[in-house]
Length: 405
Image 1 (cartoon, helix red, strand yellow):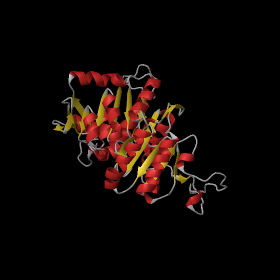
Image 2 (cartoon, helix red, strand yellow):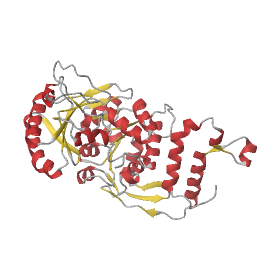
Image 3 (cartoon, one colour):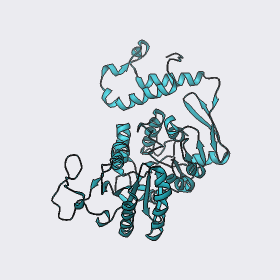
């Protein structure tokens, strides 16, 4: 394969990513192998994967110049972009830290996933490689990485479904191979999917939040593991399923109600008076979402009152998405969940964990990790907490760049 400018690096990465996803289907298919005369004489062949990698490799070798990609870091770290690979000019301390990394925690929405709920090819390839390296039992492997796991506000099912929609392979790898921190650290599992930590809200906090929702006319969703409940299936509540890939929130049926969930995961009800309050659900809920598309109303009217009741009822407030507030048990956060999981995995967060994120709820995790990386689209709070702030956003493969490092 000769040098060519027919394809950009991202296009080549897209081709490679597509090939990797279809590799299982292509195995055994004679048309999936491209054989040269010279290779055929040697009894060898090369796949589309080899073709792309040879092309990328040839162009990298022939590159005589590099272009600087703006990357800001509180440690004054600089990076260079050389065609398809990122190389970092790290100071001695950061170089030492990178070599110590044994686990990577990454947010999903806004970090791995784009606004269109897709995954940039660079990120897709980097996550796949990280998971496979982490699950490789070879004690002599060159990379020290032992774990890759999601750290997200999503439910486990919602996270896996969202990733599977973007990449079936990544969704399956996360489900079958990876530990995880879900529901803002309130639901943590090991690599087998067994729960190692969970915590739920006090019922009084849920009751007070429901009163606030009624007074302000906003929407509410409660999480109990992978089951989501609401008191009214408003458009924004339904969007949680249709836009963000979470399980569809259902109405909580009244005590003694004989109604069953139908095939569409909704409850057949004749009126909302039969719907129980969320605070009547035992044994409570992990967290609440308070939602409204009027962001100014949510920020200036609802949030101050929600924070006031949080103080009163042993809860706390965080935010990952502008039109959603989250009520969690006090002392709980994505950072505390990551800490619980790292303890179970024998990972020292301050010395062996790299975390990647973009939102307010990622800030604590970024701050206490050995290396915290904020992607280019991160909010100011997350950027301030990070050691490294990339210019590249989730739309440009920022998470992939961080993982490749």
